[in-house]
Length: 134
Ligand SMILES: [Zn+2]
Image (tube, rainbow, N blue to C red):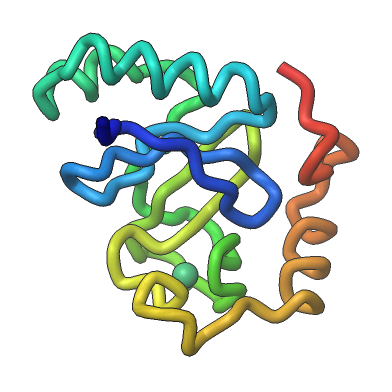
């Protein structure tokens, strides 16, 4: 039995991934919630539009146009103003939409130093990869 929605650990954050589209549909700080959502979505088997409506809350990743420079959480590369990015407000997470080098095999691993700088640069005290509260 293979599930369509799976939970993957992406850079210390748990992501629910839709294997039909290979899209990350949600990020959670809590393992339990991530697995609950994955199981729920498997039962629902939503269309992509239903999925979008269902997941339209603050925990979800949205595709935005960057107003400020950012650093991709996944590959650690800088992202310029005006580029499209996936964004999660509660986790203050930014990453490439589809063209993330880290997504194409494992040839580009993020650099720990870049990530450290980025999380500090994001500013507020609430920015800790594991310590995000809801
Ligand atoms: Zn990236």
